[in-house]
Image (cartoon, rainbow, N blue to C red; front, side):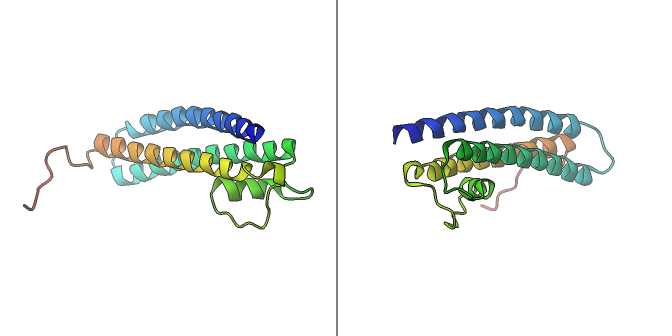
Length: 151
C-alpha cells in the first residue's frame, strides 16, 4: 500500500509541476492579450478566455498522459487494457468501472482522481482570475464598491 501512495504522490507532484508551468504560460498569454487596446472588447474577452481554456486543456491532457504512462510502467490494469482511456476515466472522476486496476494497484485510481479534482479546481481559479483581470482592464467590470444594493 505504501508503494501505491509513493507512486501516486510522485505522479501528482509531476502533474502539479506541469500545471504550475502551464499556469505561468496561461497567465502570460492572458496578460499579453488582455492588456491590448481593442475596439471590440467583448470579442477580445472571448478570445482571451478561449485561449486560456485551450492552454489549460492541453495541460490536463499532458497530465493524463503522465498517469497513463505510469499505469503502463506499473502494470496497473490487466494486459490489453486501454490505459489512456483508464487514466481519463480516473482523472476526470467519471468512474465507468469497465476497466479496474489489478489488486495490488487498486488505490491508483482514487489517487489519480484526487489529482484531477485538485488540478481542475486550480484551472477554474485561473479562468476566473483571467476573466476578472481582463474585464477590469477592458473596462467591462464594475469598479469595487460601486454595486448598488437593494436594501
